[in-house]
Length: 368
Ligand code: UT7
Image: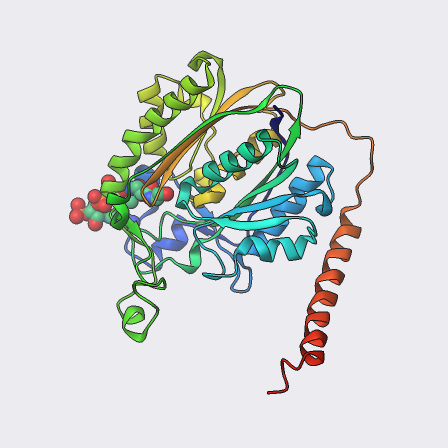
C-alpha cells in the first residue's frame, strides 16, 4: 500500500496589514483587550480585487516549486475554504484553470476551519488506496469579505491568506499516518453566515439584517474548542500507534492563544511544542494550519523524520486531527520551469475561453 508524503508546501498572504491599533480607530476595542483575550496583534487583509483563488494559486505555485512538480503532474486539487468565490463553480476549478493543471479533478471541501485536516485526510486516503499519485491540498480564505467591520465580537479575529501542500505517493514508509474527523451539527448556529445559501437566499431583507456576515456565539465556540482540541489530538495519536513523547510538534488551528494554551494544559505538553503564529495573521480558517506548516518548515523547526499532529475545530461544528511524519524536500533529477508553466497556464486558459466562444458561435449558442 503506498504512503502519502508531504513533498511540497507554500503560502501566500496579502500585503496589507491591519493591526489592533488600526481596529481601535473603527470599533470600541483596545490592543490590550485583543492581545489578552486572543493573542492576535495583526492580520492580513486582501485588496478588493484579490480573491480566494488568487491567494490559493500563489500558495500552490510555491508548493509545486518545492515538490518540483509541474501542473500537469497533479491528479486532484482539493480546496478547503469557508469563503469560496461562488456557491458554484468550485474555487478549486478556478485554481485548476489558473495553474493549467490539465489532468486534475478539482473540488471544494466545506468543513469550515477543520477543512484543511479533512482535505488532507481525503487526499491521503486517495493516495493510500493507490488511485492517485499527486494531490494538491489547499486552504484559502478571504474572510475579510464576510466580516461585519462594526461587530467587535468577530472582526478582531479573522484574517486572509492561503496555504498549500503537495501530497505524493511513495512506497517508502512515512507521510500521513492517521486522522480522525468529527462533527456535531446541533451546534450549527453557533458560527454561521446565515444568508446567501438556499435557506435564506440573498435579498434586500437579508442584507439589511446583516445576515451575509459571520455570526458567532464566541463564548460557546470557545467552550467547545477547549473541550475537543486535546481530545482529538489524543485520538489521532492513539490511532497512529504512537505516544505523545514521539510527537515533536503540534500544529493547531490558529484561532485563539487561550484555546491553544488550554489544549497544551489538557495534553500536558509545553506550549513551546505548539507552532503558533496567530499573533501575525489572526484566524485564517482553513489556511491557518498550512500557513503554520510553511513557517515551521522554512525556519527549520520541522526536520526530516519529525512526527507531528495537525489539530483543528470550526463551524459545523467540526473538529479533527491528523498525525504525520515530515518528509522534507525530495531529491529530483529533473528541472522545473515555474515561469514557463505560468505563461503556458495563462495562454492555455485564454485559448480555451476563446475556443468555447467560437464553438458557441459555430453551434448557434449566441444566435438567439
Ligand atoms: O475558527 C473558529 C472561530 N471562532 C473562535 O475561535 C472563537 C472562540 N471564542 C473566542 O475566542 C472568545 O469568545 C472571544 C475572544 C471572541 C471573546 O472572548 P470572551 O471571553 O468569550 O468574551 P465575551 O464575548 O464573553 O465578552 C466579554 C466582554 C463583554 O463585555 P461585558 O458584557 O462583560 O461588559 C464584551 O462586550 O468583552 C467585551 N468585548 C470586547 N471588548 C473590547 C467583546 N469583544 C470585545 C472587543 N474589545 N473586541
